[in-house]
Image (cartoon, rainbow over the protein chains, first blue to last red):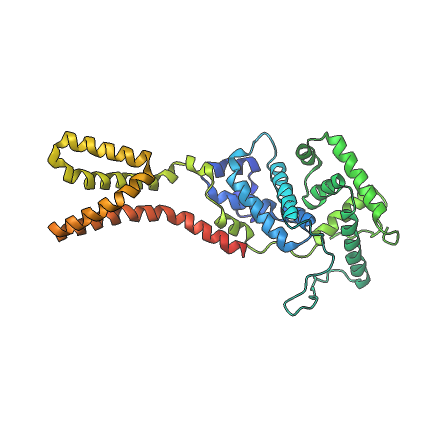
Length: 197
Length: 158
């Protein structure tokens, strides 16, 4: 997604924000492209639905643009973005009356379960099957985690935030974040069926 | 991509497995999402601080003030320049402080003025029309960017 030919793609977040506020609005898509996938995955973890996650992701970026002058450059842009993203996702779930994440595939236009053509890069179909099942079981296990563990797992693995940024976002000491994430992953492993682990 | 065991034994294994499974998830954002978000961005309050956003409103205000002076002062000048300017300034002050009341009061007066102008000299109606168009065109032009962004925002939501 990141075009290597664009020199702006290598600029730090705070420089991009300052540029946009200074009237270089063409830098905004660079900022969006940098975080769109990570924010989308993070939000999808909450909504459990790709379509909803797309809408909420867009809504978050538009909110961020409107409030860009509220961004405090003493902090990381990513922590600000993910805080807004987390709040927007929670608001969305509240609006939808906490619709649970479905593990079933949505039906296609003919009312049938769609066939997904995943690129066959692995030689062993049995392993593919195991991974698909593991992904489902992992999703279900994350849903059963306590709220604070689930949020940390989402920020770390779906939002791909470094520990330091999670500590800043959650206003926790770095050691606490590392410790909690360790315990969250341990709990997650315990929640997975024994046949998986 | 490096493959790993499906049986995570250590925290590092678990961390790696989670990262891998997230990366492999299907479905995502459509191509060109960033550009579409950019097109749909609202007019942010902080944008008003940029000088270029004041160009069109400044032109609009200038034209409105100019047309107001031309329309207001022309008939009043018979009272003398001092009185004409005084009356025009008072009218302007009332219309700025109480715009809704001033606009409501102005409707019958404008209608009466137009019919009088048409009665005495049909040509002056053309001048009045041209003045109105000159005031409206920049107003509409200043609204275009806002309308364009809003339409793009609706399109992306679909």
